[in-house]
Image 1 (cartoon, rainbow, N blue to C red):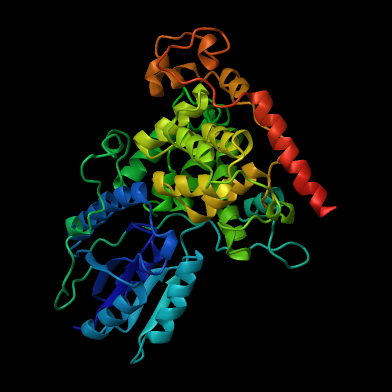
Image 2 (cartoon, rainbow, N blue to C red):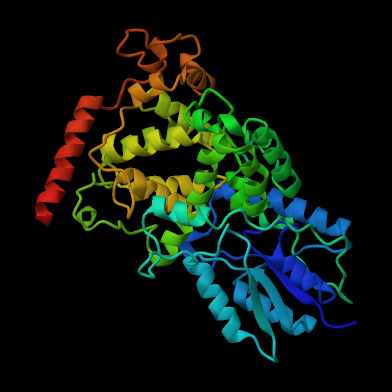
Length: 467
């Protein structure tokens, strides 16, 4: 039997429509491997919620592989070094993987290619995005920075090819190398189990991704309206499945696009994921550096100040006195996810009402979201803050109380803020102002008027320094 080909899984935990799997399987025996690498990403290693998802997704992937005569090898360490060792001990001369574009994975891919010996090589395939980042160019030959022309250009290249089914069988190697035990990685929380509520909301893995897609497809035509209504269940909830690659974006596009013009808003959201990755490819430090220069001079409140830390803690725990904000933050903590309209409201509140640096919020979401994605998370936070390459204007300060009533968030608030469960509409959106605030619910940590004034003054000061 010839030497096996290694399949290096990362954020592509599926067997169907997975070109690395198909290419490796076409040449003979395969050695599927996942490496828990906390060294290469450094401060960007996966947060707690993502690790919960990873545990269950790897368990599902291993079960899928065993049905096809294979299994998943688990190793922990620096990915490039682990793969070099596996290639040498197994005799593998090919390592197949999907392209990953986060800065740390680009470094790992380069490092691995440099260290491989005896004719072994890393073979990268596409499949994590609708189009490989960098494919689309403006008329002048430069990458797009603005979303709308990016969308129009990508739309002309759609639909993507039909999804390719997983191989019926995967040939096993002569001998299986040692593998870690998944439980030994301690990806799941101990006591207290802060992820207890995740199990009720999610079914990680390739099968769960496709089941979720089928459920959403029945209501996809209502997405344009539903994405703004947190009390309704009309959003796709595909983001964690997409992030971990349990389903390809091409499979989602081809399942939804055929429903006509009424699903275009959702397709635009799917393309936003491609757009975010294209921004990160151009600006690798986008997750830590504001794009617009005036924000380098912006005077955020000092996190060393006890009062600022107290405000940040109230935001994290959902105790700001703004019901829609508190509902969102509690949903995030309980389920590892948040409705997309509420994500904008909670992010805007931290940045503009509390005048706390967007990077603090981005890091909190990084740890708490099961769909924490470097590109999407960074681009979305900079969009809200107004500091991004294509973003909302800082001076457009979202009014959370108005947003709550406008988008009928009453039932959503009652679900996630039990102190307000008996407050009816319209009073639930601002129970303090209407005189029905229960004693157990906190007062507003700052009024909207005071917050707006403070934010505009800070922005004007930073802008004046640029003039």
